[in-house]
Structures are given as C-alpha cells and as structure tokens.
Image 1 (cartoon, rainbow, N blue to C red):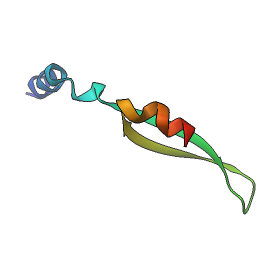
Image 2 (cartoon, rainbow, N blue to C red; image 1 turned 90 degrees about the horizontal axis):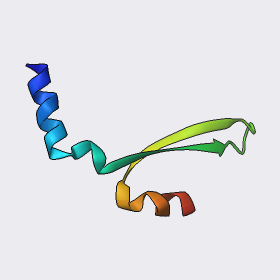
Image 3 (cartoon, rainbow, N blue to C red; image 1 turned 135 degrees about the vertical axis):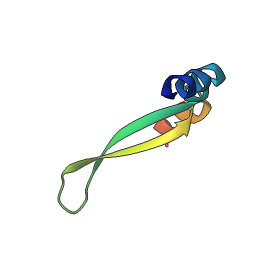
Image 4 (cartoon, helix red, strand yellow; image 1 turned 180 degrees about the vertical axis):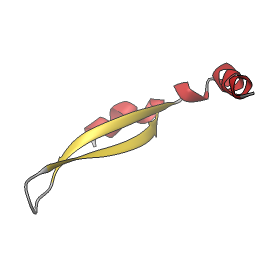
Length: 51
C-alpha cells in the first residue's frame, strides 16, 4: 500500500517544486557556525542565496 502512495506522489511531481537550502551562519555571541535549513520554491532558490 505504501508503494501506491509513493507512486502517486511521483506522478504529480510534488518533490520537484521545492529546494532545500542549507546555510552556515556565524553566531555573533560565540563565533561558532550553525547550519540554517529552509525549504523554498525552486523559482526562488537563486534569490534566497543573494539575500
């Protein structure tokens, strides 16, 4: 039954519309780097890196 659900999601192409962006952000308090993860639409991926 799970295979049926996965097959329908692949047919719709829902996974292709989003992009995961992972950034390294430096903490002003400790100076350590942390990773910030966000999901953005594929069209806005390039703009998210410029911001």
